[in-house]
Image (cartoon, rainbow, N blue to C red):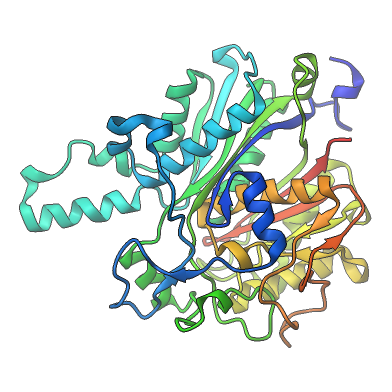
Length: 418
């Protein structure tokens, strides 16, 4: 391995050679990117079930998703919607990357999710209560389990290397990409399929998030509900989707002539160890996580061209994250955007989807606007939130944040390919 394929610590550089997106903003990078550049939210009244009994009746659904072209009709019936979307995103990512030609024992899979097969869980509990134990599906457990997505991807790829599920709530997708990068750096894999998936728009889940006070209550104007960092924010909008990337050792990607999107140059992860749902005071954990990622990449804050924020549109998260950004970047903080204003919060898929978007923005030299942001809340420290229209930036490194309930933090530093 030549020096050009080693990072500043002498580790194998890890590059992204394929991406797959299943999002409410569009299927595939091109469609999702176009919607994100428009700065228009895709939140609507929930269609998949009758939401009228709920206090919050809207979300960001993928209404045209069809698993059959990916899994066939028989297997589709035996796979929960979350795993269907996760596998579909992985299949699209592999088609985008081309065959890495990896020894199956050197191919890994890391799939993140916050909850897993929630739709199946709720459906089967209802069947049990109404029809009895003999009517419960024999596929209940493999459909419900959080690691189903990773297992299905591994089976279809035939990759027998490390196969893991990460369930760090809303940080899961970013943690999956970061840990996949570590597998390659540590010599445990030559290629890794990594990302996250989530389909948790169900009546009990929406009711529970609403009871927590975490969701926006703008039933009459759902397209205006997700307002990251805005003075009038009142909670997040629940969404669903999946994002997957093919990670490869840089020298192997170069040898096969693969198209490279960019490099996962830095990864930081830590814990707030503060509260089960609230961020640590002053964004201390988030700031430390960002600094870990910068140090891992061998970069300074001044090298970062933009930040794709976690930016959920909740009161505590946005103020804490803005304070954390100020701690790391000071008065010279780069442009900040939150794609959740458009897509809603994709929970365990959010970090993976947003990492793909952040890397693409860095490649394009263009940051999408933050939907529904008009002015910073009085409780939000001064940061430069991109809003109104896309903004041109110099092509260069980007930073993507993901923070989850439980105090789980993950930050990725992504450098676009020349």
